[in-house]
Image 1 (spheres, rainbow, N blue to C red):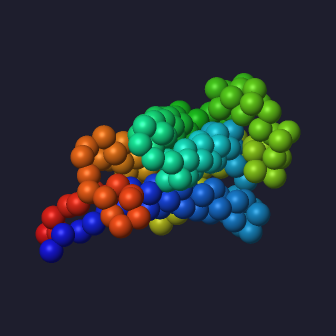
Image 2 (image 1 turned 90 degrees about the vertical axis):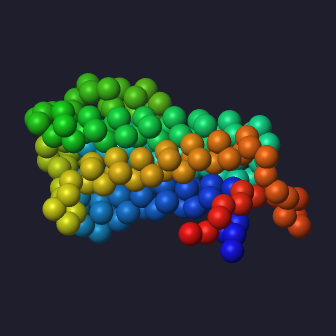
Length: 177
């Protein structure tokens, strides 16, 4: 038995996971009063970039799909770096003022474009919250890692010869265990 994996569906799943992460962060902020720090806000933006690139790759094909998946993987890797910085450095700082995360988000004017999503109301120390005894930043880093792996796999699979399904979509066949 062979398992057939369609690359656009993998990319759509990546986009859904990234958007789900932003949705969970917004619910945590507005329903449970867990205010974000600048590093949290930056990670929200990175998730949206990953989602946009994954959707672009899902809708396109060929070289565009490979480039979108590759750029999405780079964005996800930057998300890992942001989550790691938040967890290992930012959490011990009393203030995140003028941090790299704040300079990026204000430099892109995200706080003015969509303040409900991109204004930081807390310091990293204040925003350090656990879910199942694991810090949010660690969960975020793990999700970014999963997204990066999926996107790198899609970029690689999109370069390899693949079968064509009845709609002309490239598929990747993998032997089921």
